[in-house]
Amino acid sequence: ETGVTQTPRHLVMGMTNKKSLKCEQHLGHNAMYWYKQSAKKPLELMFVYNFKEQTENNSVPSRFSPECPNSSHLFLHLHTLQPEDSALYLCASSQDSQITDTQYFGPGTRLTVL
Amino acid sequence: AQSVAQPEDQVNVAEGNPLTVKCTYSVSGNPYLFWYVQYPNRGLQFLLKYITGDNLVKGSYGFEAEFNKSQTSFHLKKPSALVSDSALYFCAVRALRTNAGKSTFGDGTTLTVKP
Image 1 (cartoon, chains in turn cyan, brown):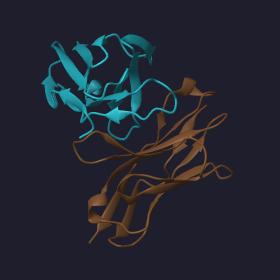
Image 2 (cartoon, helix red, strand yellow):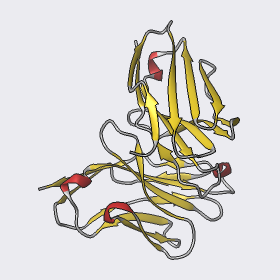
Image 3 (cartoon, chains in turn orange, red):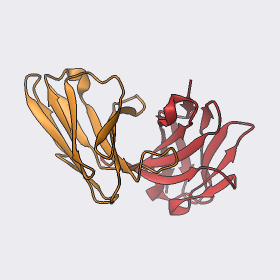
Image 4 (tube, helix red, strand yellow):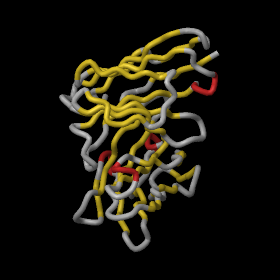
């Protein structure tokens, strides 16, 4: 395993629900990321946090709300999602957000929006 | 603009044969190149990266990749494929001068190794 855990592994929600995805890294890293992986599309970077501060929001709709209470935990709060938001959501961490740093990925949360 | 191309959606090889998964890139300035593997229902696992120095990079599970600046390529190779190598492989590139150092991933190549 990579040292990055994600819960839940699978989530089914209606468009009016509110849910949260959780990511925890046990690597002592300072940077954390959310990616979206849709079928037939390349990975899309959503958010980047470095030392708990958001440093990147890649034009993500406001129905996705990230939270990073400390360097080990990252959340993605979901509300009023659309069916096209169904995807695998991957969390990653790296030592810092330096360009040469390797990112370590969690197993992902498979989200289905009905 | 920054881009990565994995020209083959699918690569099929027989066990014991050499394998190559192709990747070409386009950036401004020096590229930093990465290969990841994804098994079903799993996240991406890091295989290897090129930052600087020797053009031949050795990584996990016997994989290696060669950085070719003139051809803007970073093909992944393994001398002898295993059935357990069957998975989805992603190439990624970063560059300081394009995309602010953020990763751009290729679409992925599915490798199938047959016994």
